Figure (tube, rainbow, N blue to C red):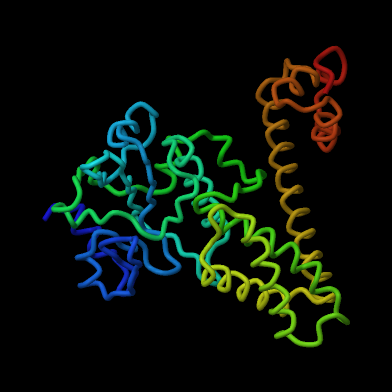
Length: 322
């Protein structure tokens, strides 16, 4: 067996959904039986090891070459119509259980959405099941790249604007999880402060779950109910314990303090750079330094003010005006 296929087999969930014919439904199977099915759940629960893309075109096996995108690790092609699943393996899986890194999940979703667009893959693909590359008797299997990817490596191939963290995540592909989480938590934060409305954590959890289902109903296709319940439970538990009126005020103070520290640190770094330029290039005026650092002249003046008493006579009369 090829090393890439061994890696794929070893990463299959210990119990996952599989089927030989999707029209007859799927079954929950242990790994040994799962590996024998034509369609398999390629990722373990709450973990993403393989990014899968569904390309329903006769030229799916070669279209990725024209899109100038990352080469897939494995191509699994239907011999009858040419439709294919493109599989990209990650060196380190990204987890989405409670307490997992929100930043990593958002980064993963942004890369996944960008690749979906670049490959012109089906944006409605649920990404639960894919053609099984271990079944070469059923599918044509092509190993394109042996080395697995890091997210940073995959990100090189996508439009940088798609990775802007200020942009709202689109509710397609893996972005549905992030979109649901972000919309739900913002709603839950506001609701939690209505302390007279929710008499218990269970009551609040029920309201969050209902809201999550309403948001999910707007996705095409919607997330599985189990996934929605998991996200709702995580959001409700965290919000109930930390976002009471007093908890929200403390959280707001911490965020403001952290933001203020970051602003001060950036200002210190900028001022240090301005002062270094002034020391190394004494012939420059404040206007010149402002242009070099892309700041206004008042910023340069403030940065150099602390050195006013140490400026030489040459600089204060007839020399550069700083």
